[in-house]
Length: 384
Image 1 (cartoon, rainbow, N blue to C red):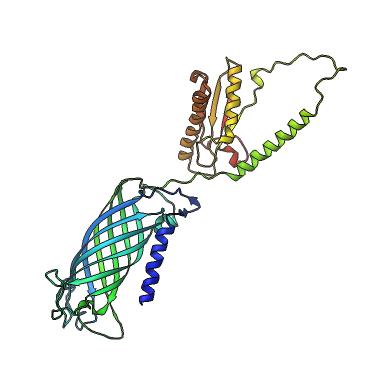
Image 2 (cartoon, rainbow, N blue to C red):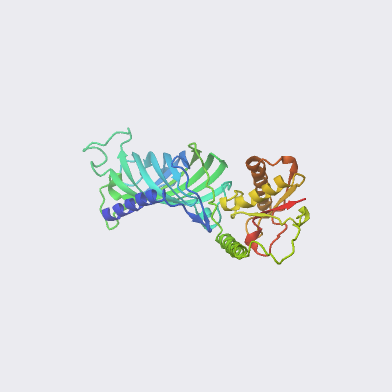
């Protein structure tokens, strides 16, 4: 059993370290790594316990007489939407009713637990969700004291060196989020310890006692960020499309470069003035769930700005969209607005275009200008 204890403790420590480096993927969504100071909380609670011993007549006792009280203080951190770890310090009173056991025993202890948010892992992450179900598994230690909260003497009611034990802990936490930094919890737990912890000295086929616990309390965020942000991953389909466009333009440029600079036999042709009516709209493509203009897309904003500088009467209408296969209609509508405003801000702040010459509109996913779904993460310039 000592080897199992060491293995469990090592696994908990290894997870705690590795979770700092690798963020969890929940339902296909990758979340950014938060700072080490984020996602910490502290909790305070109290409740009752029921000690199950090997002593005779324990099962015949009145249920109410077997209940003791307890309190706990915990500090924990969520390393990702799915996984977290905590340190719990607890203590209380055990009401023994079995023959040959001191009816009053106090205790102090602590345990380190690995927590798993079932709803986030099996469903989807929502920082505003009210209820979460969180199983935990951990290892700890309990130290027994007499009714005066003192260490028992060798001749006391508890046997010296038998009133301390490693514990193995499992349980369920019902978490109720009140606000971003405040939550209520109801926790049901079960822990196993050496059967001699109660001072009975009994040694049978089953070498362990157990204790059921039930606590309730409140948790507070310890400052810093308390939620997780989805990573804005690069859309590789979009990258491939852009690379294809670049290769095509390079080929066209090479063909133009190979043409002769003059043609003596050809009559002189007067240059054609290109009107604003034949302006080819520029587009700015965005990554999924992003309203940030990538560096490779800045060329479209630059070209539009240069056109407007050369045509002082020209005005531009920026219309932004979101693809229909990602997100909800409400979210996509707001996302397309952010995209339109980001492009307009770039024209104004980076290229000095007067805001009076710029208008914006956003369609969300109500309209899809392109048949290819991924292309609809776009803002399009329409010049008047």
